[in-house]
Structure formats: structure tokens, C-alpha cells
Length: 350
View 1: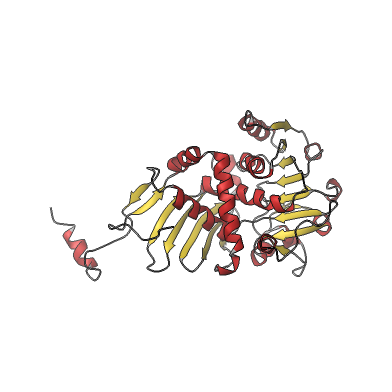
View 2: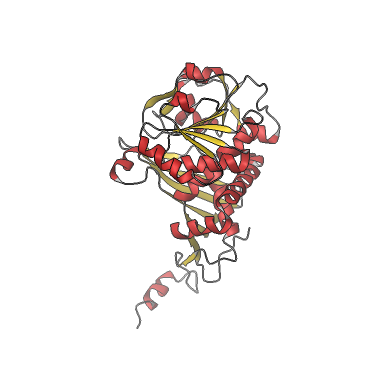
């Protein structure tokens, strides 16, 4: 990936409109597979990256976060919010944008919307992990929580894991109807369900993705049978969970970055020393994935900066040679680097 700024120090910017055009240019399922490949590649070199729990500013209404990382050559960050009340006001629960920069000179080399891209990278990460942890031949998923993430999660499981059937449930029937309508004609059996228990009938993968910022119990202990893979992506900040502690205690738990997950994930309900396995170690072959047909595997996913870095890297590589970006005059670039004031003064002349 070439990271030198252009001669005029213009920064490529991918707008929401151009991100959507890029998805359709590539194809949503090929893009999900491509994102998963980039994320998996960066997990394999996990130890190279700067890692820190995301920097969060919490309020009663939600949270605003910064998610930075660097592999020593490229720096990246994402700005993201999480405001569950927003949907009641006709707004997105999550919005985001991100940036890549050249570590060598500090110049930004990409600015991008990340609301759409975060949905894609979250789904790609879920499916990448399920490829390692879900039971062999898993082809049916319960999708509990049918908001903005649900279709992306479903299509990623189809594209990467061979999902054939999705069973939808949401406390709001209109959300389930929306998801079912959006998934119609995309090569999946789509079943709308009236309870979480019904959605889990025959499902080998269970994905939970609800939005309320509270200690909720979407899955109780007696709802979860042996041998399933749970993809828990809704709990992503302190005080927000979806699973009963009993489910956690029966599961082998896999995480992205323990220092962040213990603050924000399902395991905030457990003792600080409760054993977990880092997913990068499974991918590298230094830790075990699923070890038996009866084992319950749980991906306690909160999202991590390296996944955003991977997604931005993918976009940077795939806008090359297209017109799916704008060039922003974002950086002051005087002819003489020491004469910033002179550049300003010259701008006043007619």
C-alpha cells in the first residue's frame, strides 16, 4: 500500500455515497470476504500493533470513542459513537469515520466514512471467527436483534461460512420485517420468529446484537444447548450485556483484546481473572479453537481498533484506479514549510 501523500498533499476522502458505490462495485459478498481476509492477515501479525483499550467518553445517553492503533508504518484511528436512543429519534445508533496516516511523516493518507464500513468489518470479523469456532457444517443461524447490523452479519456468515438459513427475532416485529424484506432474494432461507427460543430452533450459530445500554438477558442459561457457537456482538460498553452469567460459565470464551473486553464485553460480569482465549492466537495456531462437538464456543466481540485499521487498509487499496473518492485540501502545504504565515498572507491577494 503506497502511503505517500500526493504532490499537493491532497487527502483521499471516501464519502458515504462513494463507500456505497464501492460496495456495489466490488459486490457485497466479495467485499465481506475481502475484509475478512485483511482482518485475518492483521490478526496474524497482532503482536506488531500498538494496542490500547478505546478511549471512551460516556454519558447517560451513550458513548463517544476513539480507537487508535499502529503497525509501526501506518497509524489509524476511528471515531465512533453508540447512542441506543437515537433510533427513536430517527438517527443511527452508531456513526463513525476513520483515518490512516503515514507514521514516517505524520501526513494523513485516507479519510473515510465508517458507519457503513464498520457494519461491514464487524460482520466480516464475526464470520472470520465463526470459520474457526462454529461447529463443522453449521448452516443455520439465529439472528437475535434485527437492527442495522443484522443483514450484514447474515450475509457475512453466508459468504464466509456457507450459511443457508437465518432465523430472525427482535422485540420489535417491524425490525424483523425489515430484515426479512432486505434479505429476501439473496440466496438464504429467511424465517421470521416470534420469540428468541423459536429463533434458536436448529441453529448452530447464535448471534445476539441488541442495542439497549443496560444489563440485559437476551440468552438465559437454559436456552443454550450443547455444541453451539455464540457470536455476542451487542455488549460493547460498560453496563451493557446480553447474556446470563450462567451461559458464560458454560462456554469457552474467545475475545479480541482482553484489556478492553473485560471492561466492555459480556465478561465484565465475571471475575477479572476468568480465563479467555485471544482470537489472534487461534488464528496463529498457538491456542486451540473448538475442541469437541458438545463445546459451547462464545466470541465476546466488542470491536477492536486493528479491525478498523484492516478495513481502512482494504478501502485504501481498493479505491486505487477508481473515481470513488474525493481529494480534500485538508493539509496546509506552503512552498516553504517554514512560511505558513506567508502562505496565509498571499491568500488575501486578489
